[in-house]
Length: 145
Ligand SMILES: [Zn+2]
Image (tube, rainbow, N blue to C red; front, side, top):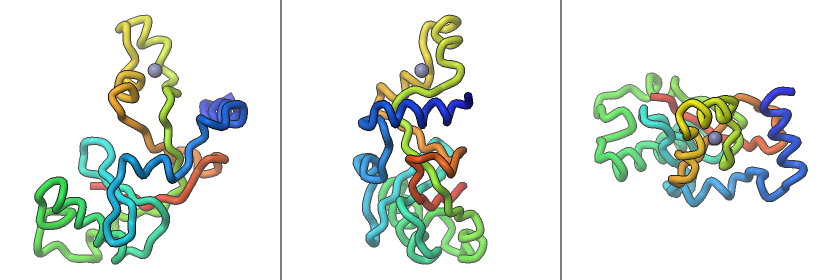
């Protein structure tokens, strides 16, 4: 059984653990009618829903200005639209707010803590697009730095 099979089973048994797009909103900001947020530490951004490139990039540029003080998403006034838009991806993903790390037990045993659990406890979350067919998957647009 794969991790996502187990997750699907868990989510069916405990519907309160099922992820929905609305559960993402507390972590996000709305710009130009699009819900967006940074994920990870590399400058990647995601938006709820599938949007056409100009609209979602406008929202991404806005959060980059507001949160990071950048001139735009790539912090380059001369950036070409097509170059930036090339890094957009339309995916199906789900929100993960409970530890599903395969290394959880081993990490607890070896280090005394699990990085995923610590991150979740600190208000972190994971957006998993490894299984687009997952019953909880919803559409997102990503831009990877
Ligand atoms: Zn864990």
